[in-house]
Image (tube, rainbow over all chains, first blue to last red; front, side, top):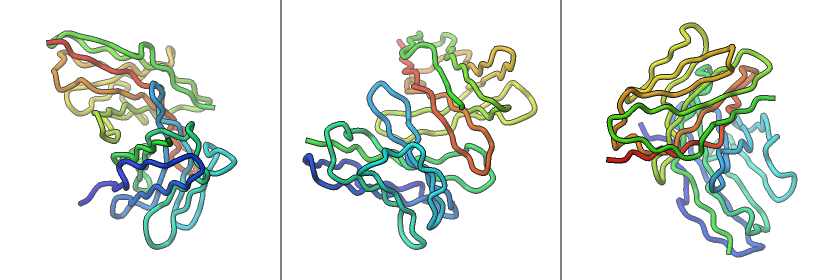
Length: 114
Length: 114
């Protein structure tokens, strides 16, 4: 039973480019969360999605960031016109419905903006 | 709003010594509390969780934590540290609403000295 799959593991972008981060949840999980981790900081909640629905995007920056979880395929976190401050590790987690707080994490995508 | 504080961003213990990682939370309703561990270059793994019932919770790898409502604390302990325990530890809180939004603390890096 494969775990949460994130790709790419490392992504390098120049300022102004777009970054697309992908996350495939565990089989049977319909809830996806995205977190951002900066050095010396904890994980900051960004967005919570279910299939075809954004449930809570209170942690997402108002501009340049978007997320989706289509009916088919992985969840995508998209960052347009990246800036150096976007450099961070981005983690995706999935959970089965009903098991409070039991998140299964992917290995993360390390985004570096040059 | 929920929040989590972890006293001590870095903790060092000798192999075989007691491990104590501190966590305090704030929550407007009875919380669900969690400890997660992150090994280098990996995603987070759930160590243990408290939802209701017994306030002393046992987790994997010999760790346990005690929920103390009067102190708003959920400290993590292990009687005897092992080299393999060296990792980053995150305390987290969740308020059961219509979904499981988990808020993480800043983390404590545990070093184990041979």
